[in-house]
Every structure is written in C-alpha cells, then in structure tokens.
Length: 150
Image 1 (cartoon, rainbow, N blue to C red):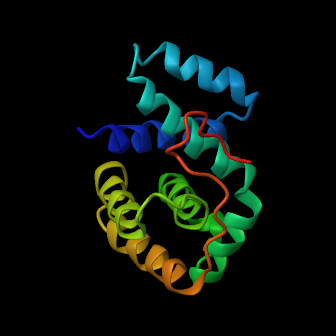
Image 2: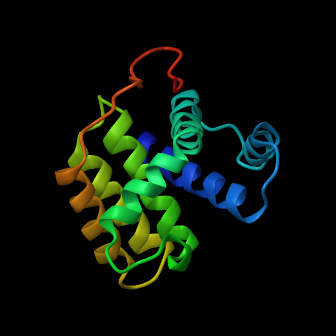
C-alpha cells in the first residue's frame, strides 16, 4: 500500500476516534500510534497533517460539505463518510501539493473499503461538487520538513 494511502486510512481512523470519543487530541493520537507499531515517518507525519488540519478547519469544512450536500444534513451522514469527506475537503482546499483528483479518488476508495455499498458514489458526488465550486485556501505544503497546518 502506498504511504499516503495508508496515512489517509490512519487519519480516518483517528478522526473517527475523535468524533466517537472526544478527548485531548494529543492523547488520542499518541494512543493510536502506540497500537500501530512503528509506521514510516512520512506516513505518520502526513496522517497528522490531515487530522490536525481537518480539525482546525472543521467548522469551515463542515459548512462547505453541507452546502455541497443538498438535501443532506451533516448530522444524518454516516460518521465514516463524513470524516472521509472532511479529510478530503481539507486536502482539496488547503494542501497545494496534492492533486485534486488524487484526493477525490482516495476518498472514494476509502468509502468503498470502510463504509456502505453506495458510499463511494455519495462521497464522489459531494467532493466533485466541492472541487468545482470552492476556491482553494492553500496554507500548507506537505513537502516541507515540518509539514504542519497553520
């Protein structure tokens, strides 16, 4: 499995934990990594960029998803689908060096893998709409050695 794909899956799992069992983010992340063995440094760093950036911008990200998801309230969406879209929306809007098609394809594949049968189509439709309607707000590059959201 590619490093960024694995990092996205880890980020999804951390975001899910944060939503289901709110607590101190640093403790949730530390506990998560303690159960994952020792992932490659690049995997861990990119996963944490996604998690921290998604959570720091969650209010705006949720508004963007809600606007794109006509006839769907965020609270009615499956937790897994919602967190896949949150992380992918963060990538689309804030990570300049990640191609938009890659972000969307990875999110669709995760929805197919971790969620319900039709989740891939649902996630694809919303993210495609976001990609075509929202302007990027690039703040961070994951090529930097200290890649962290600002």
